[in-house]
Length: 116
Image (cartoon, rainbow, N blue to C red):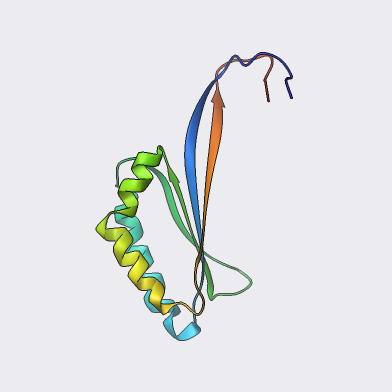
């Protein structure tokens, strides 16, 4: 639906959300592994964000949220040793993790009208 002219530049970003359920007996081990990997992930080329969360409702539900500047940066990360270790750590899970990928666009500039 066209609302008007787009006067802004758009910048794409890839968001990765990994939802994890782990047994209570393995939670500390998995949490320590992901926390140590996360420091290095943040230093990888194109990583805009990498945060690790625990649900306030269920301490065995964890979430890793990453944002990548480009698809190439994300692909490089997914071929990295850190990602291989992360995948290996998923063997500790109570059930398979859910990985979701989203591409979003940030509008930049001074625009009076936006075209959707």
